[in-house]
Length: 436
Image (spheres, rainbow, N blue to C red):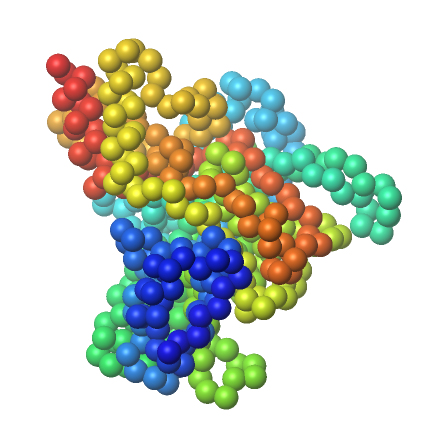
């Protein structure tokens, strides 16, 4: 029987799913906010240790969004104050962001992210487009006020400072999808993880490529967002994996989730760590998601540094996503009903419409023949996720009790739109209601 450890109370249904999926030599560590989505079968906030030389690998634990995550750049300048303080400037910035960032949710012919295949030097063979590869992606300006000293060496001089970060959440796009299909196909043929990732298909080169693809995509999106917002002083570097064809923003924080890597220390047999939360061993900085309206949680060291070493009993991992409150299918029904009522009473549909329109923008796909339908807000703005709640209870156990917790609040953020498959039926329903 697999070994299952939990830092918080483990739901019986989640435990049963893990027991049925894992093999006797496998291990799962459940972090706070751990869950399994019943509609998709995706696991969240669980750190797996999987045997590398045993067949019958539990394919069901793998998330197709390999090495997705979030990256951030600390920004300063007069433009930050203008965006934060002037609604007209903020509206113009949101419009520029909306046009600058490509999204697969808005364009059926678009494929973002680098290709998994590469040359002998792990460099791109072809050009690629940076952009949103899923409905949970976003990029934009976040602000925060937190207490710190003007100089880390000066004690007793802490005061409130206002900071701003350009934050992007996105995945690897094409590289991640290709890696997932090849890995799953090989595992179903009876291969072990060692066969797939060390010497077979997809192979070590593919693992290196996909491990960098998400970070490269986010860094390019951040650069596009910086240009759209007029950030002339944003630091950029050539993307060496593309032969210098593109430039990427220099990120201060780069967090990866749904990552897999071979464990080399103190292991008597080949073991792979698959992390559906923040893997501090391969991430730069520590960051966790709350619901999008609440913002993002950034954890700095006690001296205010982004770079820090995380040590805890959960294999040096940290919760990433907050708890899911409802399924997309149920929520889209609620959203459709709210918009129908709003159309009937000539009112706004969203209960926090003024804040949402002031701080967020998005670009949904348009469908031919569908007219008079309202522009539905992304589901993230309708409460599909709970706010972050693990730090107040488990900061000491997770090794972040001494960290400075900086809560970044959305100021001007572009979201990916609703998944076209879910959006199509909703807008046609609303268009029919509007035409009556």
